[in-house]
Length: 161
Length: 342
Image 1 (tube, rainbow over the protein chains, first blue to last red):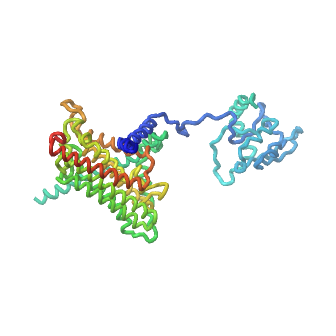
Image 2 (tube, helix red, strand yellow):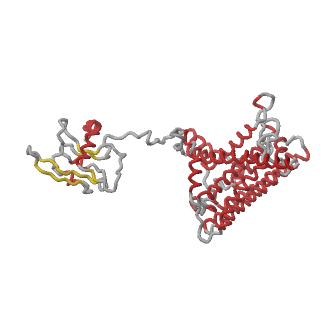
Image 3 (spheres, each protein chain N blue to C red):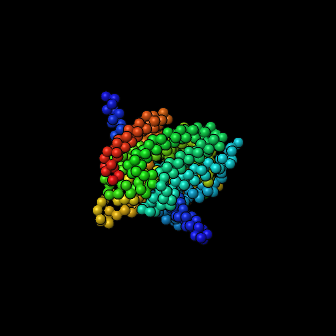
């Protein structure tokens, strides 16, 4: 009946119902992560900034096979190589253009010696227009810095690969 | 003789400052409270960053940061805008919003101007505020500003009538236009307050007040999704800040008036002689704060009314109900004068 609907609307019942909902939400727990202080947990497979790893004896892993360069869909990696005095093949240049990189992780998957890896660093910036290309020294430095985290993450994830 | 007069002027000016300064601070924190409360109701945190001296203080310094930002910004004049009127409009809005506070009694005797037609004065001041809106919309030389101004002018004028009628009920019940007398008529605990015998008028008054201040859900004048910001779309910097100040001062005004007219002003809801039953300015602040919270609560809850729905609500529902209830109140007042407003 129309008249009952009018009378019901005069009691403001529907409006109060809506206000109860918002009133309840006022006291509910907020799920906001207050970012710089709080952070969400990261997966072991997180693909962040790149790094080149070393063996335990300090020898760099990369053997300049250029598989990563070949597989890179964004052509972000460029490698030059030469024969070192001890007869092994090593890189003279290993550069990653972070503007080109799409963080797909193919380089890491293609690497036969687990040299190039994607660390879980996602907060980084450049302080110049031309600082977007990481050279070999920088990549090795990042690897040295994060070796422990990278190794643990790889170990945790190993059985699922 | 002359010194007495000078002293009176200075004393009055001091009293005005004592009202306006806290009011501005309350307005500043009302914007903060609004963002926090609506954020909480929407499952967010709201502003919680800006603090002082490295302490975050739950973002309590946010209003000051906003104020400084607005004051430092440039006031942009639209092409072919009428500069004089463009600058006058926010001043009119703010002046009328503040002027109405002259007759608001905060506690017994604590009122700047205890005039005997306070209710009429308040209606006059709140009605004058619409000129600021119209002039702002016209002087901006912008179609959106003009549309917004027309919308809010029509809305304010419509709801002014319902509001006026609701107050007619109050003045019949109290038998006076003086706000202090109106509060005195409600002494003696929560059951003597006017919101019980005048319940329909109370609801209509507050809802009309929300519509009058162009707040959600009656904010078609602002209509973020349609005409950006309405009449003040062309305003920036300090001029915009004045509009903001005026709007929020009006919100506080409506809330405090609702507390005075219907919720017994500074009287305690309890009756008796204990300390909690004493009349106090704190009761007035608490009641005003409750209605301010309702404002924010409405905004967090209700979707915006369509324009024809606003007009329908104002003209076809509120005004008839008001008239009917005024008749009821008047009849009761004539035949059973001791039932209302003792």
